[in-house]
Image 1 (cartoon, rainbow, N blue to C red):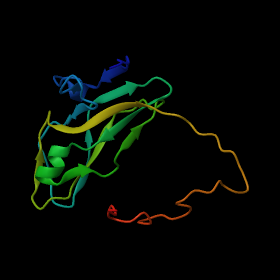
Image 2 (cartoon, one colour; image 1 turned 90 degrees about the horizontal axis):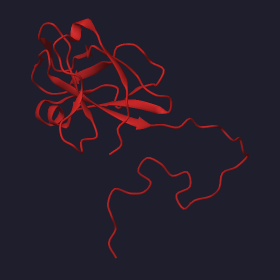
Image 3 (cartoon, rainbow, N blue to C red; image 1 turned 180 degrees about the horizontal axis):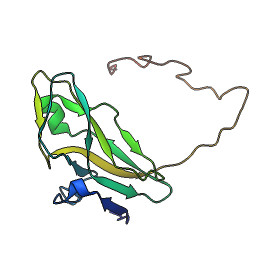
Length: 154
């Protein structure tokens, strides 16, 4: 895997927390931690912005994607409202994670809990080319279920 050097500032309320890291050598996402002072309870249906105490400077041409943790989603119904969230290369503020409890029980977030994953990815900017028509495809303008819900056998 290629390593990209990214400048990071750990804000004062993150003191004592480790910087994001990869759980395994081939992990795509780094774990982001809750940088809260006191435990926080998310009641069913509630959402809240959880601080990470991190500000980063991504190189031009990259983004950081903030994604839910599958274990929290499966076990507790905890996910992210804006997923994947995008951190642009020119953003220099604190990374925050908008968590929501879609489960049936209150969920307590503790300082240092793994709350999301951050994936660093290259990105492109598009340039529009106005035309009067588009090339034809088999699918055409069919959307929202137009390709069917099941694989058809021979």
